[in-house]
Length: 403
Ligand SMILES: Cc1cc2nc3c(=O)[nH]c(=O)nc-3n(C[C@H](O)[C@H](O)[C@H](O)COP(=O)(O)OP(=O)(O)OC[C@H]3O[C@@H](n4cnc5c(N)ncnc54)[C@H](O)[C@@H]3O)c2cc1C
Image 1 (cartoon, protein in one colour):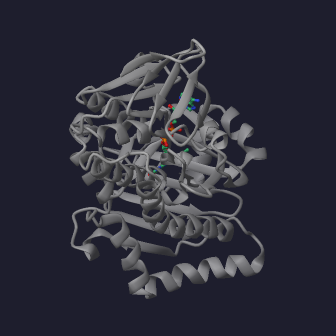
Image 2: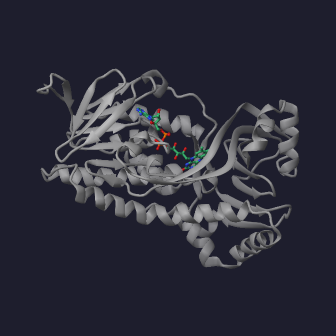
Image 3: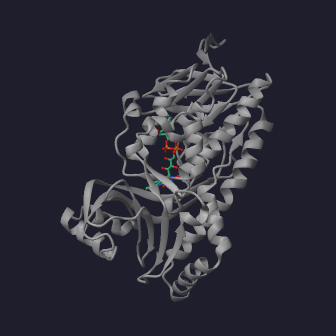
């Protein structure tokens, strides 16, 4: 970093790269640039102590084998305690009140499991720990970027304490509601589902057999994801107008409600810890780059969690952009040049768009309770079991580790 004073008397600190947001995507991205000699400022509104030990936020993240591989390559995975990870070996999708299930079985893939589950706060903690191993990074914590702009030569970011940063490239990883995206004039498609997601952990009497259940009940969706031992991560998706009532339920009523909704398949279920609630808004940026600017993570693509792709996509995009930046820097070229950013955009869009559209279509169908949709929902599951290529394509997406 170098410090300069502009002709107007303003002090500007110059870096090679500014990253806004030290969430899991921003941290993984910076970690992916380890060893390339760039001076990087990463600005985060949360405090360093919060990043070092993030509180439980109720999210258990289902990771594909590709994501697990990327996290290993980035040196993040070793910082996640083995005993806090669990395997998904089977996945069952159930429609309405039917007991018929579309079944995904790891044995058909030749792999030992379909995916892994790790708590979001542990991923964030591990990514932050791994960041300490990267030279040339300055974490500016407890600060927000309140203004940013760019020209042919550089981008500037102003922090809420008036500090001024400059670099040839700024990367925004500042969530699906990214203010930086808006400042750089990138529009985004937003879809507010009018629904919310309540997440929590529950103990239960019976074993889950490493099976993830996605139950598209009428009115609400219930996902049960297998954690270590006799514990599961429970995700309830419901109209936002009903969410306050479920959040306010006393523990005993809540336990009984989930036990019954899950047809006692895991015996009696008991809440562990707090319930957390998230609004369901999906976001897809029109472009993932502008002049000297790129978007990663949820700031580029914010997914509905039903297909568990958000961070998986974010991680893949972050790794892809890092490849472009490394290559440009190694050649002594401009890391903010538009052709490298466009290549990242095209590659990430090709992967993310079908998943985003497919997920939204699935959500549309499985929240439509009119009779034709109910019939289509059921038919789709039965067809899914019969159509081996479709089922295998989905399982390949989970278990493929190729980059
Ligand atoms: C209930 C739920 C379940 C999910 N399950 C899965 C799953 O199973 N699998 C999966 O892959 N994904 C899942 N996801 C998605 C996953 O959690 C997100 O994709 C991921 O957390 C996004 O990371 P991010 O770093 O892009 O953004 P965030 O985690 O939103 O981080 C953004 C960071 O930017 C900071 N920031 C924002 N604005 C500024 C500013 N102006 N200045 C400085 N800092 C700023 C914020 O403080 C924050 O730390 C789930 C999401 C939810 C809600």
